[in-house]
Length: 306
Image (cartoon, rainbow, N blue to C red; front, side, top):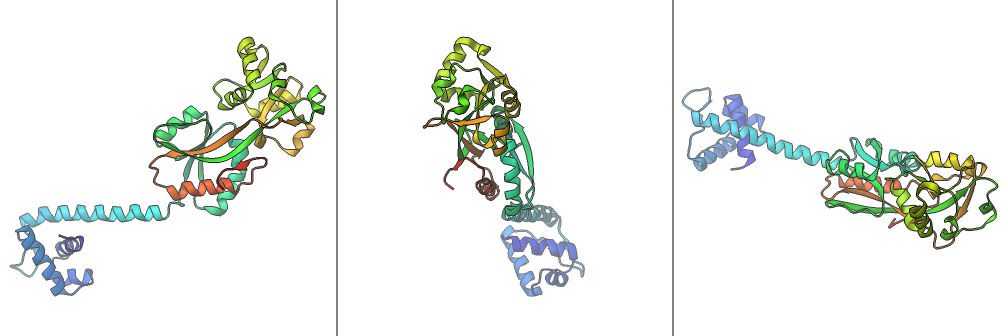
């Protein structure tokens, strides 16, 4: 039994005539008739009543023809799925990003993606890592951009870039004249950090051991909090304290607001990752997102495996 034979019997059932069915299937009538006779012999039943000029299905043929129609529809669906896979750069892509990456990556990513996949617009979600992970696992997102350390069952990660941290201080701060700063020198300062639950806060504290130790002892007495990087930038500019921010969040014009000082090597840094479900089907689309990020020309970062 073949799909071709099923197409032949469906055509005969719809045309009620062997000749017209043959024309519809672009074969000769003898070819169609022989194929249908072969199928009837294989099944052991007559599919059509040939006793009159207008061909009609037998009772057994009606049930078989109904199933044949469903089989052909499912086969067409397989072809459609394959076609969609071939054109997987068409249609929206659902991308999630953590708050401390989205504002700085997206403007350049979108410009780059517009050239690489103009028919693949982004549906975007900015949120904390835990929320993005749940949305990814449920299929509500196609991929997410997060920061190391990150490991989830059933999720694969692609390293994107390493990003150094810098110290920012108010104008006139004692650190302003320094060429570089050690992590130990932050311990006695009033340091503004992101609120708890934000992965970048944990990354800064993990990198600045002395600051983390002092924070555990004194709690929030010596570490004020901000809800976003932009909020922290303005609090530092106003003179409330100093902070530690990633390279992508800083621009040349920021020198008018506050001072930017590098860490002494080895400087603290974070690695940014692209994560997707292990068996995500739109692999070409995922690869294109990765390429677009590599082409985004983020300042101050080192791309991984580009």
